[in-house]
Image (cartoon, rainbow, N blue to C red; front, side, top):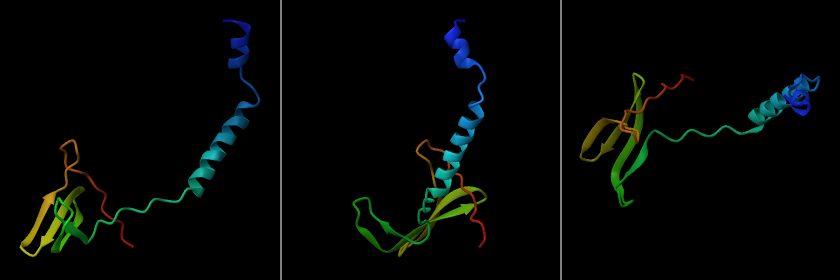
Length: 99
């Protein structure tokens, strides 16, 4: 190996300082960045595919035994169906933590 490569890869006293600086920047960004609000999953208005609202229709997301389900309420009745991902698998969820 040539001399410049050996010097570049050799341990330096500045490596710990650079690592601490990188960790500090990441920690600062984690503290300063605001947390994203979770999407509303309860009592949303139900709409047709063309965007027209269904009168008296509502939908919510339920978490039952780690699986996500959609609860659909309309004047004609109600249904609870699995919530699927784009890949065809049932979406998993974490039950909400009690307040």
